[in-house]
Image (cartoon, rainbow, N blue to C red; front, side):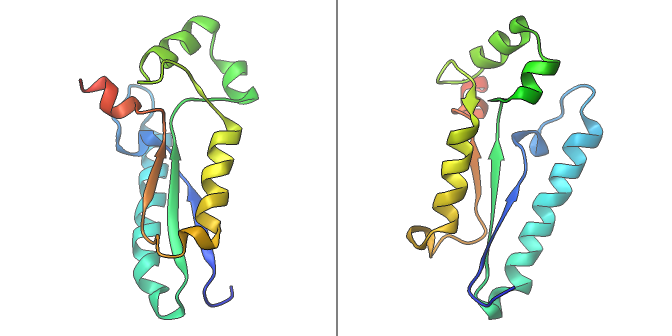
Length: 122
């Protein structure tokens, strides 16, 4: 990897959640976040930026396969924006973090969740 590179991990908002039947998925995403935290320090001398993108509920073919319309509506209702996100919104966040416009962003975990966590805590 070249000095000055940008590494972007894809995690999930469930890394910090304690949802029923999500222990393995949540734990692997939490571990990924910790790897990113450590990599920030390990790669600092090479000026390699490490960031994490953590999507919330995103309308993808995978979600449509496993979640009924009722579940999708429920997930959307838990977002401050009252909808599911889409893959382009996640991709645009990744593109931004990889760009020179984000040259001073390092060690961040960017939530792409429509404000779900804050909205659920209101």
